[in-house]
Image 1 (cartoon, rainbow, N blue to C red):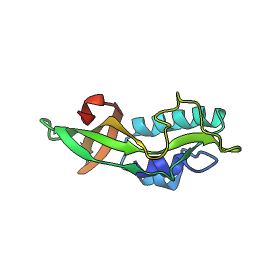
Image 2: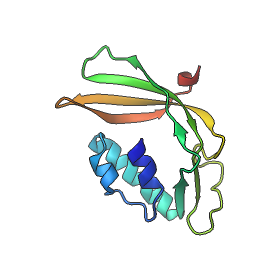
Image 3: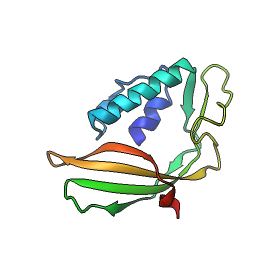
Image 4: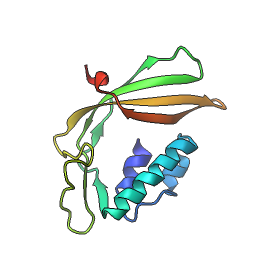
Length: 130
């Protein structure tokens, strides 16, 4: 999460940032980040992380010793903005609310590869905040 936040907050958006290169993520997640950066670059948007994100993760399933589902009802106060003007992006940029933040339920699918847990997939999971 840290690697993604830092990378998306700097212009130009760089899918080869040192933070992403060192992050515990699979190639699939790295490619998804790259795709997101292409879209945000086209929109001239950068992530404002000054409001922060509070993470509250918990494991909900790990019947398979090499795979775990981690839910998080995070409080996200980040928002996308135009890199030149600082104007907040339209509401369709998720979650894009800024401070004080909003509870957002997400899931992270972690896989164990060579003794190391890596993020392999993720997305919205409203049940994480119930």
